[in-house]
Image 1: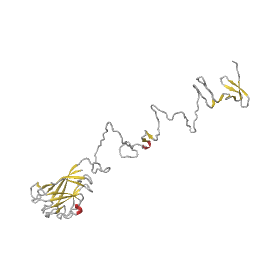
Image 2: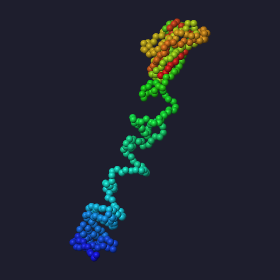
Image 3: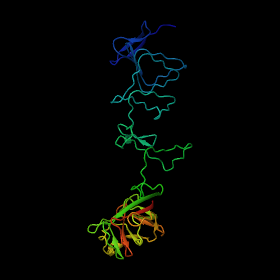
Image 4: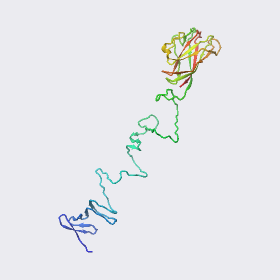
Amino acid sequence: MANATIYGRSSTGDYLPIAVDSSGNLVTTGGTASLGAVTVTSGTVNIAGTVTTTGGGTTPVSGTVGVSGTVPVSGTVGVSGTVPVQTTNNGTVSVSNLPATQPISGTVGVSGTVPVSGNIGGTVLASNLPTTVDTNSGNKSASTLRVVLATDQPSLTNANPASQSGTWTVQPGNTQNTTPWLASPLLTAIDVTLTRPADTTTYTANDEISSSTSAPAVNTITSAARATGGYVRLRAAACVDSSSVATKAQLLVYIFDTTTTPNNDNAAFAPSDSVMNTCVGILPFNVWYPGDDTSGATGNAFSPYLGPELDIKTTSTANLFFRVKVLNAYVPTSAEAFVFRFTFVQY
């Protein structure tokens, strides 16, 4: 085959020869030569339009290939060197042909701090977690984790037992968020001693027996109930007299839920209407059994309450109060003592 020289037209209208140098590159001298859509400058081939490779092989390209327009390629294009990728103004690589979500399988290793915003697993907001977390017991604080159980929380396959150590405080009331619930009734016995003045002045029927002829104190059943406003049941009562005389005292014990001031000893028992409005029960002691049969102050006697049980509610305190009335003309001994014994069931 005979050798031929290819001429291309320059921008001035002259024809310039296009040759192949010893390295196999297309070169020209004196400017740029155009062959239609192909322009050749020494070392550079610019192609405008479409370049199609055929044969399914590899088309190696070295140097710089400037391409404008669309370059359809079939087969494999081998590129050596660096392929520049155009970025946006902020330096982000724009890859529009990749899917928005990339599936990941296996383990992803993360080093450093990973900021999280929004929902984690669709249930817990990261913004609701405290900066630091309390790890010890005690009062709640800003660093205490809050946990909400779902209303449809499934039952546990294996029950987790809850236990309490120490002392439980149990009070009556059963009012939500006010007092703990009552666990069980409690049986208690309370003794109150009424010692009359050191004289032997005979009582007239319906007089009051009290501790003083000038400044008597009310008789108090302290902590009859577990707490203020608590309920009790008087299960039993008895009176023990420190003397044993032939004519025993016929007594009535008036129980009140509010404190009251007794009359002076040996004065008439005369409570006002407002005082009687606080009376919750009356206990008669008129059947006596001798203990020590020695007559007078050296003997003693016992009288049980034979009436029904009484349900009583305390009011402003957990205490109950009582006063004593004598129904007969009674000759006492000096400083005679009456011990009243009450048995309550506390609720």
